[in-house]
View 1: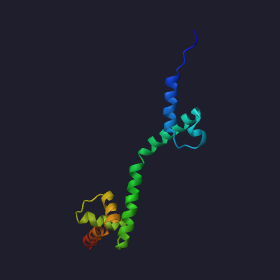
View 2: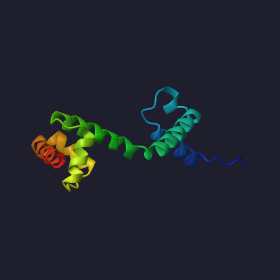
View 3: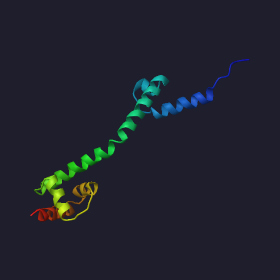
View 4: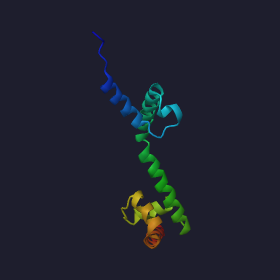
Length: 118
């Protein structure tokens, strides 16, 4: 009696791994041992850096707000402090979006922040 083989299931497993490694270079997308290592490592990196993503976005928003507020003669910290003093409660994500897409609204906020500082 011949030994049993697990052809269908093992083929499906390998096919699933190769699909996850789609776009990887060379053997990292073809050779099953290398594919397994590459997919496992990429999973570890995505898990580890998922927590970093919110901080990365916050830094991006702060850079955009700083650049836009300096165009109106305020530093980022003075701009944010002026908004706090004038009781404007807009988060950094919305402020960065206003700075990029609606400069007139951002100018009005900058004026409001400047008047609250004086």
